[in-house]
Image (cartoon, rainbow, N blue to C red):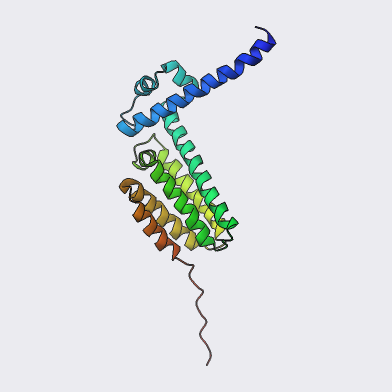
Length: 202
């Protein structure tokens, strides 16, 4: 094969590989949602994707890798949604950190409802070994980012991130958008504790 032919062929192979990878992920999503992670098999995924077992192992190390890739891609979309919402709030002149947080939280909940089946998959507790640790680490990292938004209000960050994490689970499992708005309204009323007023001398 000439150098020119090689240059022309490589992108096609790359596109084909990307298409196969996408098909496998889409199939894994369907299979995991319908059967659950534990009951799903690699053969279920390749059959749904009309691919070969070899092609799956070319792109992924196995079933757990498929699940974690779906999780990471979902989280990337959620991060993009929340960043866009926060940027939009600031661009509109919003300076109250809580209102910026609520705008970003609403975008996150909207994303969960938009991709409800996938979000529910990750909340059911039926994932690969160690996934609960990954979830906890991600929540901790998210809380740390919020800490930067609220400066030194650590207690406030603990309360609002904990409340929102619980709300995400309830909203996803119920599919109730009104509940999401009610939760956001309550969280939005939370404010940092004021310092105790020193007693006056007279």
